[in-house]
Amino acid sequence: MLQPILDQIERINDFLNGIVWGWPVIILILGTGILLSVRTGFLQVTHFRESLNSTIIPALKSLGKSKKTDSRVRSVSQFEAFSTAISGTVGTGNIIGVVSAILTGGPGAVFWMWISAFFGMVTNYSENVLGLYFRKKDAHGNLSGGSFYYIANGMKQKWLGMCAAVFCIFAAIGMSGVQTNKISGTLSEAIAKFTSVSDTSSMRLVIGIIVAAITALIIIGGIQRIGKVASMLVPFMSLLFIIMSLITLGKHFTAIPHAFALIFSKAFNFRAAGGGVLGYSFATVIKKGMARGVFSNEAGLGSSVIAHSASETREPVKQGLWGVFEVFFDTFIICTLTSLTFLTTFDADKLSADMEDTAMSMSLFSTNFGGFGTAVFSVILPLFAFTTIIAWSYYGEKAVEFCFRKLPEEKRVLPVRIFKVVYVILIAASAVIHSELIWAIDDTFNGLMAVPNLICLVALSGLVAKITKNYFDRKKGADIEPMLSAYPDMNEEFKQDIRTSNLEMQ
Image 1 (cartoon, rainbow, N blue to C red):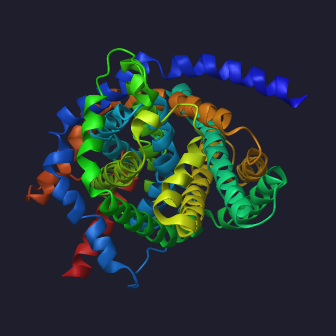
Image 2 (tube, rainbow, N blue to C red):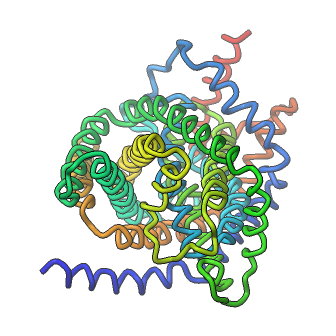
């Protein structure tokens, strides 16, 4: 009885997906990134070193050190905001998503992931700058921001901001579904391999319920608890994955040049030809690469900016530089390592779109490390996926708050609680749904979420350039009014906070 309903949902989604991820949106994603790159003087290149020096390097040096907090504002540290954002982006898309892109679009899809990421670094930077510039503070000192805020208050299109918030809610539910589905699939296969248990469907449901229960315990604590959990898990799981990937590449060192050759030669595959993944058309290669690239690094969606907006930093550009590193780390490091290990481990001519992406991802580890590799994969992937689930719960929560922002603050609690309950229930349910359908639905909602955000980024590109210039001019010693917030009262408050901080450092 359920199957006909799922078949109808799949047909409707296929139609919408064809529109959402058609050429107009692909061009909009690339065009927005190119426009923002030009208007900021290709900041992802000219200020990349500063991005490292002002973000990840000092954050790593400060780990474990106590820090004075501002009691007036309930926020998280820059690193915790980054960890929450990167936990929302570094998920199954970095492993299974990349494998899926290669299987369905060929090795050339990786090239288009890189292209989307290069321009996406500035797109993500711009989202963060606008997110912090237009963020709001409630009576309890909670900072809230996101694409819906700068669309409504910056672009002055409240209806479009509402659309972005609604799409964000559905994208959050879809993203959690993808991640849970892959967690349950991975763990059930691993358990079945090491034990005599054969009923994987029941096992998947049990795993889904466990994931839902743990998620509920964490998201009750809000962004502060999510940030702390993410800041502990993200460095561990990323380092473990990088070490395993480098060992694999060391084993297949001689195949690395051929892997790069495949990526570049198949990036412009203008006509279909026989033979595995090497036979996909140019259009398919680009679409798969772009869709999976955006799914992975989320540049253009307007999602990770929600976490960044809760940062304690007063300078929009400072947090924006975290966005540059975020996309670089997500795509140019994690996704590239996945691509190279996959293409050096398996013969591309023998790959097929009919192959199951989760099974092939697990084979990537088991082929190189045997049972130990299967065990490691069964730890890494669930951690990647779980941190994404908790990050997106926060994104959905903030979108719900925005939708009901006109209600008194005490009455906004109920819709947020309802969302959290529905979110947790659907986590358990998605564990047993067909994985390709879940992934396709989330692709559609990601695309829908991206459209209003990208339109706004184009419209406010001049403001991004102005805020960027203001920050770097002040760093050079110019005595000009800081652009810290779109709202005069918050701008004055943040100016005073910066003065106080500078005096304490002297």
